Structure formats: structure tokens, C-alpha cells
Image (cartoon, rainbow, N blue to C red):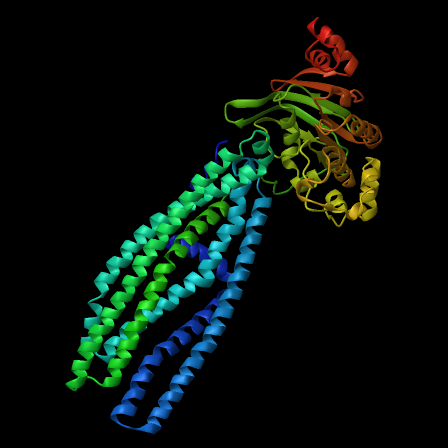
Length: 596
């Protein structure tokens, strides 16, 4: 089995892109006053924190040099007040930022899902489900971490560093210049760590994507793995990817194990230099003892935001990459658009006409070629032909999942492109071979929790397709839970539920695409009996490989290589001894007759 290559989905961009950052900040525009309040709280909090060392130095001078205990008490109270002030505004800032970030991300997820609902079916053909889930969940989480943690840390630490630099110069410019001697070494160390951390992070994300893809594929295909005895080979391949991921994470640990202790060493050297030079200056009367102590406290505090900024680098990098992917998705507009002034027929009669319709999914590779036919209101027409002949493409065009390359399709003598898609699809009942059931219960899967469909209508639809027989045998009846994709139901039961779902919406045009191809004989008999009653008064287009399911229709269209090659009822087509007759003999006549 080939492991899907999802690397391109994990490639990370720059750690900071100004244009992209401005675009992402628009997500916070509805909450700009809350953001401004949080920023104000952050400034007050950091200002209160920066006041601490200065108050300690002043208190030390008052106690040691001046022996003024009254001033010492006041400085102690001021220091306590600064601690409480920092606590209160840190609480307000954290609460505001977290609430604002979660609300903004909630809005962004809604925007993304709404945008996905507007996309054409061709969009989902080109974009795997896993990738779109990553956009709505993982990428939004990365942005949330940026807004609620990374951005606050960056602003707070930047303000702290600027404030400390200003405080050092104000206390004593000579000691400040001495402290700045460590800045070049710290700069080059941080740059080297950032380069290596970025490369390692990129590789670890790629391997993690490969690991997730491998797990998803092989857990989904576990029956095949076990049936063909591939457990050990599968485990060995998983172990290779898992080991590679472990090694990359351990490399990251080694980088951190070198970088952060070296930062601590530089911090200790800076403190030592300040202690020695400050002690000499204090002894010579060039600087107060309290100022030296405050200086040491500021130097120690300066290295903490440097470490924090290095740790948050990967957050910025991942958030920028996620933001770029989200913006790209939001900028992808659907190609199928509803007309500014849609048309509709009233009442809806259910007439369908194809006029010289051609379709290319890939330019230059036609799937349908000049297909023309008409289905009168209430007429039942079947489309038959070999796999790949173009039958399902006819249905996709009628539902306007795609647009024609040439020709036009009329519904009630109105061009399909002049209809509002929502209005049109409310008159169409589509039943596919690959039945999709949602997690929930039986009734919810039939009515799709549409408020227009009452419980009585749901039960009536189930009765009409004979699905109520097996539903009432279940302990919960119509409230019986349905697992993901209907895993606890048989193929026939799932198809009966899908049939009931289509009928619950009472469509004027009913479309069945291989709807009975995977059911047993008894279930097929039940559906055939129901079909004769249910199709009365409705226009129907029926696709089937099993010709027994279409013998009762008014007309059969034989699709071959993208064209309508034959047309007529069952008896006429058998007598023509063409494509339909050959398909019929292959399915129903004994082997000897086939050979003849």
C-alpha cells in the first residue's frame, strides 16, 4: 500500500509575514475593543512587574544607607501593591484574551464550514477530507494558540525587554553598557537555535503527517491487512515511521538541552559582571547599593523573556503556515454560481431535457458527447450501460454538481443555470449506491432533522419502502442509535433507509443511481414492490447494472462511450440485438447461450 504524500500540506512558511498577519488580525476586528482592553491590561501588568526591582533597590537604600524604617515600610507596601496590581491585571488580561480568542476562533470555524458548504462538488474531488478537516480544526487551533498565547507572550516579553533596557540605562549607563556586552553572543546563539529548531520542526511535521496518514489508512483497512496476513509487514513499516518521528523529537530535546542552559550561563555571567563592577562602583561611591541590587534583578529578569520568545518561535511559524492555508481556502471561490435573478416554475412539473450536452472533467477528455433526450413529467426513464459509460455524469449534471461543457439542460423548460440550486434540489430526490448514514438515530437519518419533515412523515416514508419491518424489530425503533456510516446495519437496511430519506422529502423528480445493486434478492423484491407505488406521478431517472430493476420503466436509454446509442423499452431493445441485448444475455442467459 502506498502511503499518501501529504508533505505539501505541512510545509511551513516564514515565522512572520506582515501582509498575512494583517489579514489574520481581521478575524479579531469584531472584538477590537476587547483586544484594546487586553493590551491596556498587559501594559499595566508589565509596568507593575518592572516597578518591583526599582522598589526593592530603593527600599534597600532606605534600610541600609539611610536607616529610615518609615520609608522602608512605605516601599514594602508599594512593592506589595505592585504585586497585587500585576496579579489583578494579569487575571483581567488572561481572561479577556482567552475569551476573545475562543470567540474569534469559533467565528472562524463557522466561516470556514459555511465556505465549505458553498463549494462545488469538484472542489471536494480535488481536496481530501483529511486536509479540509485539518483546516477547520488543526489550523484554527494553531491560530488560536497564536492569539491567546503566542501574541500575548511576544508583546509582553517585547515590552518587558524594552522596559528593562530603559531601566538599566536610567540606573547606571556604565553598568548597562557592560550588560550589553553579552547581547552579541546571545543574538548569535538564538539565531543558531532558531535555524536548527525551524528545520527540525519542519521535518517533524512532515513525519507526523506521514504517521497520521499511515495509521488512518491501515486502521481503516485492517480487515484487508489481517485477511492477507500482512500484520508484521505493516508493523515494521509503522515502526520505521514512528522511530523517525521519535528521533526528530529527541533532536529537539537536545537543542533545548543546549540552548537554555547556555542562556542561563550567559545570564549568570552578566549577573557576575554586574555584581563585580557594581560592587566596585558602590564601594567608590559611584552608585548606590540599592541600584546595584535592582540592576542585578533586572538582568536576571531580562533573560526570561528571551527564553520565552525562543520557545514561542515554533508557535509563530506554525500559526503563519496555518493562517496562509486558511486564507487560501477562504479565497477559493466556488465556480458554480446561482444567477442574480433566479427563475423557477410554479407549479413544478418535473420535465427534464438534455440538448446536445457534453462534459469534460479534464479538458480534452470528454465524458459525455452531445447527449440529447427528454423526460416528460411523470415519465420513468432508465439509463443503462457498462461501467464508465457516463451514466452517473448525467445525474451529476442534472443535480448541477457540475456545469455542462457544451449544450444545455432544461428543467421545466428553464435552463438549469437559471435556477437557484437550493430551490432546484428541493424538487430532486437522490438515492446513491454508496449510502451515507450519519451518527444519530434512525429517524434523524431519514428526515435529516429537517423541521419541515414531521415524525409522522418519517414513519410514513419508512413504511412505504418496507423499512419499518426491520426498524420496529430494533429495541429503540425509530430512536435506535446509528453508528458512524451505519456500521451496525446491513447493506440492504442502509439502502432502505436511504430510500426512505429520499421519499421523506417528497421530491417531484426521483433519481436512483445503482440503488439496488448491492441488496439481496428478498430486499430487492421489497424495493421493487415499493417502487411501483412510489414512482406513480413522479418523474424518475433510474441507473442500474441489474437490468431486472428497470424492466418496468417507460423507456430505456443505453449509454455507451458518452453517447446515447439505443433507446426503447425492454422488449424492443432485446429485439434490436444491440448493446442492451448483449448486456441482457450476459446477465440472464445460461453459459451455453452466451457462447452461441
